[in-house]
Length: 116
Ligand SMILES: [Zn+2]
Image 1 (cartoon, protein in one colour):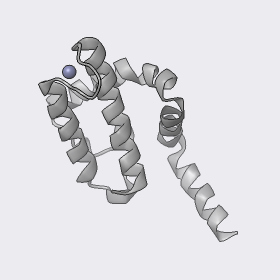
Image 2 (cartoon, protein in one colour; image 1 turned 30 degrees about the vertical axis):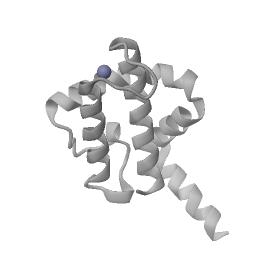
Image 3 (cartoon, protein in one colour; image 1 turned 90 degrees about the vertical axis):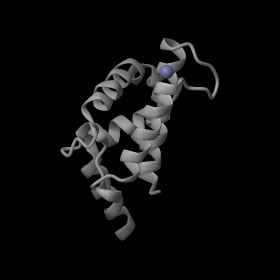
C-alpha cells in the first residue's frame, strides 16, 4: 500500500479505536464486533479506492464510495475522535489535516524540491 493510503488507514484505525474504547467500553487492541466490521470496511475502501495512489482523503473525495450506513458511522466516529486525535497523535492528525486542506500544494512543493 502506498504511504498516503497507509497513513489514512492508520488514521481511521486510530479514530475507530478511540471511539470504540470510550463509547463501547473496549480496551487495548480490542474493538467490538461492529467497529471491527467498520474498520475492515474502511480499510477495504481505502485499498480499492477509485483514485488509486492519487486518492484525496475520503472526506474530500467526490466519489463517496462508502455505503450510506457506513458513511454515517464513520462520520460519527470522525466527529467524536477527530478533536481527540489532536492530543493523542498530534503529528499524525496535523499531517492529515494539512493534507486534507493543502494536498495539491504539498504535492507541488515535493515535486519542485525533487527537481532542484
Ligand atoms: Zn465499538
